[in-house]
Image (cartoon, rainbow, N blue to C red):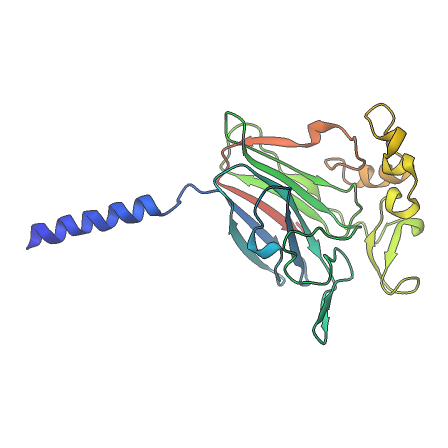
Length: 248
């Protein structure tokens, strides 16, 4: 009888070990802000939506989300000032079409973006970076854990809402409301040069501007225009966790 129980225990242990993805990569969203944020998650084309594409994250809480074991890429951002009016849901910044779960939709600019690509290359790389190309709404950092190689913490810790130039201020309500985000030059003026479109859509003609320089000076480890230096995207081999921290 004792031997039977011992064998049964071994079988249960074996099943538990093989069925539990103990080495699975985890994406953890952490809200260190003193207000609620509503993170959005958008996969790139051909990749599955994670956590329905959006959730509520109250101040000083976190949410851990399993990442597929296969190649996956996408972006994460924070929505702010969200509320319901009857059944209608909307956000002051980063809105994804008036829904809590974005279900694959992107967020409205301006918004700080965390960009990531996981499980690629021969060394199971995770590439990650923080972009202010579409403007800024919340301080954000990207922190890998237990990876191999050079895996720095990157992002923008400064709150740029207080110092955002008047011409880039995004106010809600428009005109007289508080500053809820800081626009990029492209979002503010919509020119081909500032948006790196058409003739300017290549590394030789797409250059930084006085507007992108505002973001670069405050947060040098972020992308601030479309063809900014590729070295701002970092590669970490086989991390166990990728942590996006709002208001780090």
